[in-house]
Image (cartoon, rainbow, N blue to C red):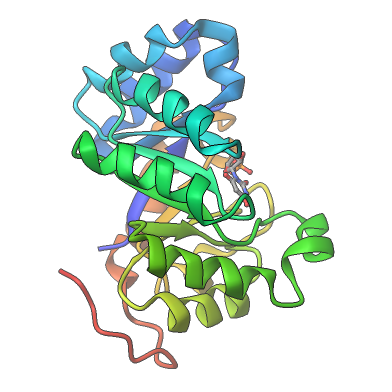
Amino acid sequence: MTEVILALDVGTRDAAVSIAEKTGPYLDAIKIGYPLVLAAGLTIADELSAGGLPLIADFKVADIPNTSRLIAEEVFSHGFSGIICHGFVGRDSVLACVDTAHDHGGECYVVTEMSHPGAVDFFHGGIAERIAALVCETGADGIIAPATRPERTQMLRTLIGTRKILSPGVGAQGGDPSAIAGIVDGIIVGRAIYESADPAGAAQQYAQFRSLRGTNPHLPYPLRE
Ligand code: BMP
């Protein structure tokens, strides 16, 4: 199944709780990061995780290993089940997040290539491929790869095998869920759900793409059930 992960980047606690409640039945996880946590405080994580869905911390950790570990420790003491870190900081910093996540029974995802147009300025030319190799070396659980460039995400799939791919860029950034859902393990959707007049209906629409997992005919990778 291709999971539907809500990027809950709203600006107040009340909006976050309300949208999470409405959309929850159609979601597989919720991702929160700086926009919500800076507005509402980290205790919003405790509140949302009590709702029962896995909660992913998108702080794109990119620091020295000790600081990365301290951030990850704090994250996992607030009910998160996963953390996202950057890969360009190198093996030791990525390992700090991976090891801390695993110590807490959580998962660590590494940003391998971003979804916005400017990402090609840096991630192309071999960097994304090197980060994908680092993901395999460090035992990270998966990568963040762009729904806006399915061909790049498909290439990254061949490098990381059955590790998970979570893919942002669907909807507001122009990514087509029918083009990406067959390649990845989860689509990350933000504005197209939480800015909709009917967030529950929008989430339900995206939930239809759950059944596409592993259906990309060009990609014979072994599926994890
Ligand atoms: P939206 O669907 O509203 O564009 O939100 C996408 C979410 O995914 C945002 O939280 C953004 O920070 C995140 N994201 C992204 O869009 N592209 C990336 O490459 C990595 C991300 O984490």
